[in-house]
Figure (cartoon, rainbow, N blue to C red):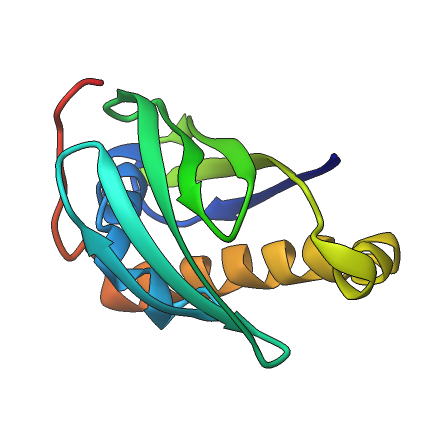
Length: 149
């Protein structure tokens, strides 16, 4: 099992950052390797990814969701094994720290070597930087789900 922790400060209020993160179907717009996400229920998402020519499909279940605080998930079926949490920390009225912590199991030699070379860490950092640009350029979230899980 491998672990990644990354964070970024975004120039939007905490509720805007949180609301945008709950719009899973927009993830392909800022997450590299994510081709499609389908929100199947309030707590179940279906992911299609393609990284370095390797296509994977898996389902992830949201295990905890507290508005403006955190979204936690774990995979429940498919080609990937991972779990994680994204937390949102109010810095002031217009700035939020977004922190991502993830555990994953590399599959096979190529993924294990890529993990040891820091590929996943760099990809996660890049995804957060693209999220920052995405939300700051929009100036507001594209939607939001405020339910509690």
